[in-house]
Length: 347
Ligand code: KG4
Ligand code: ZN
Image (cartoon, rainbow, N blue to C red):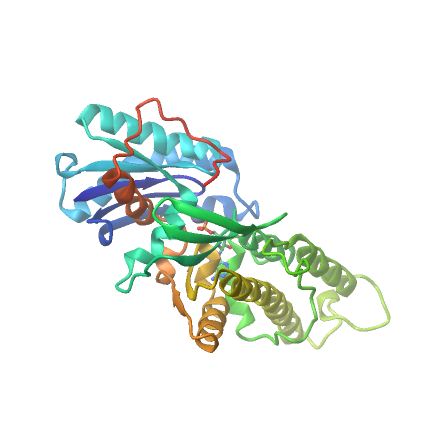
């Protein structure tokens, strides 16, 4: 069964063809980072306009790379939320038009459901039930997944998402957008114990909070920049460029250590609470090298298993939308051509 997936929920225009829910035949992505970089974050209006320009070339490329045409498709699976409404509109309108013109069934997929199914695109797939940690630019949440369609939220962020914290700290340090990959890289050369940034455990709740951490980094940077009685490389009072980059690497490593500690500890609580030792890790922040390592270590200590997509399938992609779409199609969940995108769509 061949399914075309489409995702335009944020700043990536993406189309993919997958076979039988798990085998990727093509996965085309047009990334917009260059457009948004200079603003330090996504500008929704610019994102929508670029989606309009790129949607047809990206879909065409995905079909060609798979050696297929529309008549070969069982259905088209499109992400209809959550996300930026203008961006979602482009993917949904395009998918509906193509389904109407080519008489193909349409399937609607929740973006978070797509992230949950991204580990199923790898060789080794998790059995149900499992604990899913989704960490992205827009979401940080823990679910117990009992089966396709049976998702129980265990916790979610009360303020910023983990990826959002990465992006904001990166902007603060003048490191550009998206912040995650840059901070991940710089942290490799920094000392994670250099600065003791706060970890919000919120008693033993499985909810998350990252805005306090972001504020703590901001205060730290401000104090390093303002006149005080200790010399600071951020004020140009160190021994030159080497000192500045050492401090920035230490801030990156210490910030990352605080994020990873909380994500891993809460996942550990979740597997203990639910008595389930299978974990999936997905979403853009799941590409983080420290998080991947620490999650594997924690699972090993608890004799559990971690399933995570390869790094390129952690960030937004349409293959994961097609993977979840496969289950909807098999279950007969066909969407009408009056499908509308929803910015705040619960799972
Ligand atoms: O899943 P995604 O592509 O989009 C959303 O659904 O939000 O996630 C994007 C987020 C961004 O905030 C980006 O900074 C973060 O994922 N990210 C990372 C890494 N790569 C991407 N965060 C930490 N470490 C990384 N290596
Ligand atoms: Zn995403």
